Amino acid sequence: RSLTCLNTALTQSGAWIEVAAGVEVEVPLQLLFVTTHEGEAVMTHPRVILRLGEGAYLHVLEVHAALDSGAVLTNLVVQCELAPGARLVREKLQIGGAASSFVGKTAVWLMAGARLIDNVATLGGGFTRNESELFLEGPGVDALMNGVYMPRSNEHVDTLVRIHHRAGNCHSNQFYKGVIAE
Image 1 (spheres, rainbow, N blue to C red):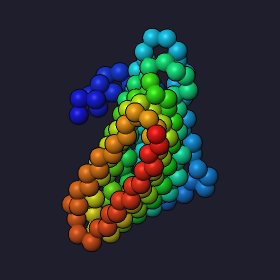
Image 2: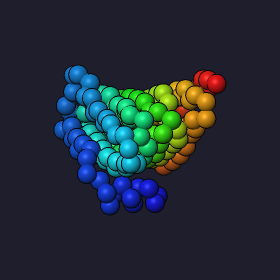
Image 3: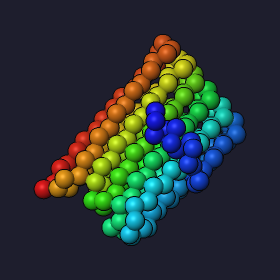
Image 4: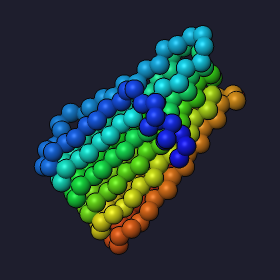
């Protein structure tokens, strides 16, 4: 919670995306967050807001990359609201070096009949934490959470998922795999 508050206080970049009811976005939308920094440590605090109207569809490709050898902390907050029958496919790729850290908090509210597929791939980074909290608010919600991580040497990756089934006839599934080198 404290990192979310820090993000709220220091956000200077990100995206606010709303898809109107009944609209199906035909091509994936890519969000690219690249940190290039050498020298003194730097922090970034991007925030992404996704709101999908009733029956809307969106496919988001989200990339977070720290390309230089300097110490970097990315503190990401993502908030998603899926109206009844909305569908969201979110794919997140994280690429970092040994001096980069990534902390991401995602909160998703899914109304009746909404569908979510959330895929994350973590390829390097000194410290990486992905935290997701889903609120299944109506009947017929379906949520699938997938992840793959490939740390090297002394890198650390962890994932925390909380799913709140607040209505009957909902389905959620999680599938995470890791390959650890060195």
